[in-house]
Amino acid sequence: MKIFVSICSYRDPLLVYTLKALMQTKSAITEVVYGIFEQNEKENSLETLFPELVSRSDVKYKRIDPQYSEGVGWARNINALQLTDEDFYYQIDSHMVFDKNWDRDLINDYKEGCRAVESNKVIISSNCKNFDMVDGNVVLEHGMDYTCRARFYQFNPNLWLFAHGEHIPPTETVMPAIHIFAGNMFTHSDWVRNVGINPRIFFHGEEQAITLSSFAAGYRFFHGKRMSCYHYKGSNEHTSKQDFKPVVPLEIIEERKRRSEIEFRAFLDSLEDDLLEEYRVYSGVNYINKKIEERAITRVIKPSIDIDWEVGDSE
Image 1 (cartoon, rainbow, N blue to C red):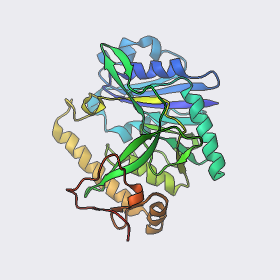
Image 2: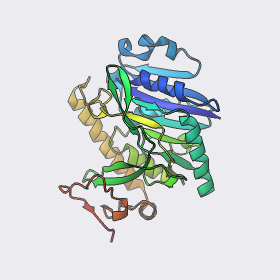
Image 3: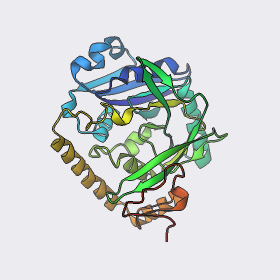
């Protein structure tokens, strides 16, 4: 079995930790190809600082200067073009580390999900446990096992749906999910051809577009029995965010965001009401009436009270 791991990295100094962690913790049962699209100055890049990693036969590497990046959807779309004969596609963030046998866990969960729905159109996705960096060392913050249950805490006038992945004890079987976390999703490589990533989505709306387009293509979603990955705790104020210490004028970033919002609205408008109703029944997210039903609301983070969109039972 062969896995293509898609890692798009924007000015991220933690990329090397992510890549080494993947390599050091994979099992012996799989062949893994690491597809990297680095958006970073050459002097700060993997090819300059860690050429021994870039030159490996199991690494497919591309790089551009960061000012030319058009956002996460654009980068992930380009990086997916490096996929060839791999059986599975694993899309992650560039600031993550992993438990041993992460690959085996994902494949086993995927197969269990396939059996549950009698189809190979299955996506395994969750948020992650956390890690921090202390004096150049990775410090894991969770010493026990968890899985995740995704629910939502805000549905705002810009149509952005904000998800939270509550940590819960591991489950004995994979659990049906209602949302895809774009920075930790595992599926058959056919998904890239059947669905793929919209390159015109800059950042906000990315997970909603992936979730809805996958659902429309017949995919069903599951949380794995346990999370085998950790996400950098300080990522909200990290150079991997294009508007954090930006390398281009903020007006350019705002224009990219504006174009992305137009694209996302057009995507939603293209979906038939019957599909949106089917997704409401499946998830509790009501795009037609702009509501989140009670069953889809997180109890960990309370919904915002200063928004125009309603939160509550669907009519």
